[in-house]
Length: 298
Image (cartoon, rainbow, N blue to C red; front, side, top):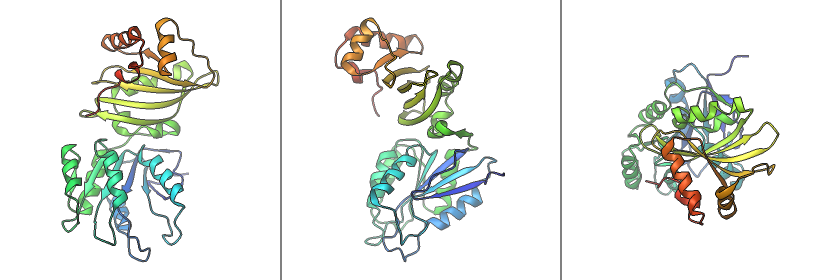
């Protein structure tokens, strides 16, 4: 069976098991379901401009039948799930009052404005978009004045894509492409471990030189661990085990004391600088160690 080049996933639908690239088409939807949406034109432009060989999945937060929308909480969960993992988020904000206010769009853009995965588009007549443009510029996100330019900027963030499936779908290309993540991920299989899912919590620097990712990892004995994986300035990673379902983790010495206070075990897989940071945290054995090992947000 031939994999379709582009798959459209509408609100509350489930995507395919794997993809080379993924895009979320965000922005206000007309409140009146009888008024035309701008998203069909965005989809036509994406289909026209996508030229890579691998399959692209496009998430559309509108139901196929706008007269029969999903329940609000179901829609919110769906949006949160897939906006957090896609490779790029296209924000098109043709805001007009009162028909297309885009109030939810403000919140969504604020959550991801500094993620490195956002392209922002606004027509010249859009109302009350000055703050959106200001913060897009502050985070060096691409900004465009037309929908075709916004689509081009979004696909520019994606590039040629890279195949991911199952749990690796949850790792956006921005982090997936970093040598530090590839080193960490490629070490799982030789240990008999498997990535079940992930969520990027923070990125910083050009090309995501620094990042924090929460990973769910299956161990060979059948246990499942929640791990916080961290990379600073392109260095090797440090991993914090947040939970272990089998209770097989047996920390010793000062690490046991830190596990008791903070609720997780810290182990080092990184370079000497990162080892020293972990050792300093173990030596302190106080409640402040919960946050001190994390990089500051910019």
